[in-house]
Length: 181
Image 1 (cartoon, rainbow, N blue to C red):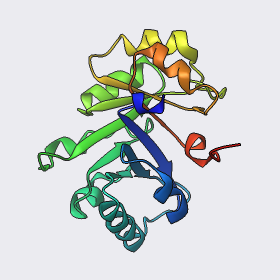
Image 2: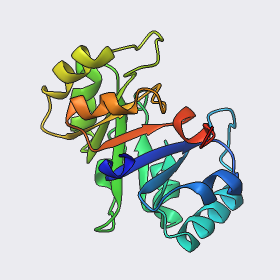
Image 3: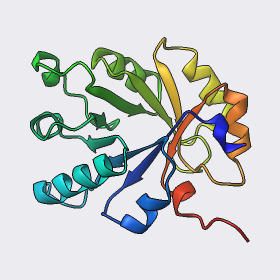
């Protein structure tokens, strides 16, 4: 059933080899740690090396200059990042820029930032940005960019993502759930 999903995005804030080792080959790692003021470059390099060894793509959140400098696979621009400075940077052909949005205004901003994919949040997690399936579908029809489901995805509600005609999703809690009984 879960082979239906072409790509899964796992957001991490620490280097945990046990969880990363359990992930399938279609899972992309996104390192985001907003609690640190300065990103630990040596940790990012360790993560990059480990991900390359495991044949996984590795993205860094909210720091496009460092992602380019360390030759990562891409960068994730969170919804609060509204900067267009990166449009002047020279990027490698396979370097990907992805970003998240919660509403139409943020979707349009991500389009201006020239992201490849937009993560719409929050699909299931009932927080201040809660969308639900219907609002998610409405918002995803307002862009020509590929849209990825994000927020509150679990083993219990994973089948509902098929209703969105999406073969990709992102999250944290889905990957931390134990497999089996």
